[in-house]
Length: 174
Image (cartoon, rainbow, N blue to C red):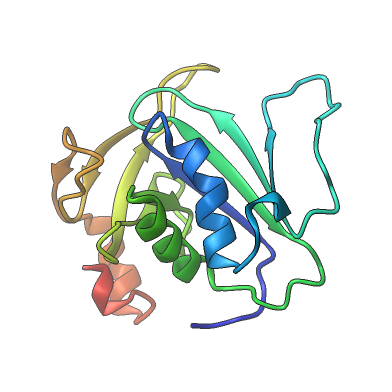
């Protein structure tokens, strides 16, 4: 598993209880006691955030609607030497929480995200964002069947062909 930057990660996840499982999963992955993982409400518009900012791992959460219930912003304190690659952390957390996790990944198309499954698979998902504030996030399509998104069509994404031909995609992504 690679180490080094980044120190900040973004994940989207389905499941009403996912937020409560995130603290334990982060503690497990970073080999910390649960109280060293600080969860805070990122929707707190007052800017007061009741948060312990010096915690080794910070995790802001925001409620979402639609196929994805939560957005998570995970940050690591500067002294944390273990900094897994985004893909590696997504796979570890998806397995620990037993839920799929979307992450921005290495394709810079705003509607294509990568998805890590609890089985350790990593593939691509199409993310449709709402046009209006507070609308629903939907996953209309995935490249492999993902149990957390039963309504999504399973299909190939032609816009990734050029990316894969350039050798940037992982074989296991297919």
